[in-house]
Image 1 (cartoon, rainbow, N blue to C red):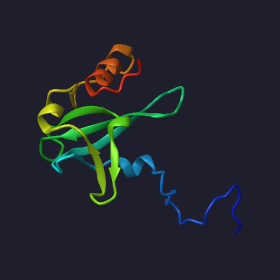
Image 2: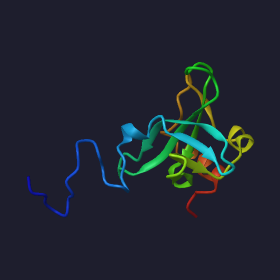
Image 3: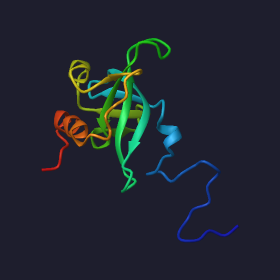
Image 4: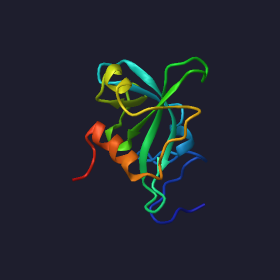
Length: 128
């Protein structure tokens, strides 16, 4: 089958090197810059209107999903590291634990613009 628009022949579910399917992001490990495992990505949050990834939800702590805390991280602070096979963020575990979080039973306030601003302010990603 011929390709169009510069597409390369790929096997099913194999996106280009700079792209990844959301289903493959879930479960990816997140490390501190010191190499410490902080947790895994549980979910991602998209902008309804622009379709851009806004936040990654990091699951940390607990055992088998019980007692985990969830930390919304601005997508912009995550950098993919090929060597580690995961994302790296420039915070320590203590800084992460001091940041915005919620429990599984709690629903984040995505409808409240102040909620997102608080996250962005904490991680220094808020546009001025």
